[in-house]
Image (tube, rainbow, N blue to C red; front, side, top):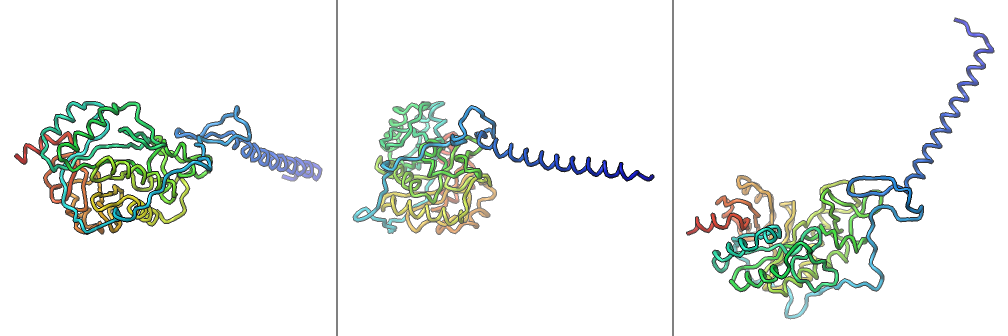
Length: 348
């Protein structure tokens, strides 16, 4: 079909105008998206628009960085209290007590402890991932738990120490919402840099390479050591499994360096600093340390132990178990206090 020349010219002009309008529309849409970014607020539930905030506001849930005069103590271990690795570690066997156990039934916790012989290893959760302390802490940045009977927890500490147990304090290391909220420069940022990255549980994670982070953890460990604990276990000693935060370095090397820094600040010849990671190949610092692993099925103990670089794995490798399965007894093991009656009856 032949189209008249004038008609073709008219169609060409219409097509050109339509193309120009389309390009202008695309540019306007892109500008609109860029303009909207200043009103995007990031939360643990995703992103939303908030047109009430000023264009100059910082977006996202961002904690305030510490003022220049704020100080987090840095500890150095020197002199008579310096690290001495000559005091050999021994295999441990015992039970762990969670904060939930203490809140729900402290009477049962105390009853189970009464049945345990002296020398049993007993671990108590002293600081959780929210950053709350479950005991009376004197640290300036400590946030005391409001849902925990702190007086009862302080009494529990005295009880386990008076009965001759080997006492272990459990502390969440890099997963710490409270400290991240008040020391934003110590945390892991979202890819958008709009604020600290938050995991699915609503918790912030601290950067292991940050000096304030390691100094804060050191201060917690030293306080617990001074309270008389034989050992402190740092849980959440890892990077969160996500690609939604900023960290460009070598994660394994960062964790090894942080562990070495903490050991140099906190270790002593009558104290053990241990680490619970998600990597069996994690190398312990050359000191009085143990490697803790959790969620390992009893049938996979040998294969898991073979992946480690731990010397004397029967002593320095500790499995956290929820059952009384006897296969764990080949290694150091801490079981839930909920199975203590079953395990102790079997021993008898």
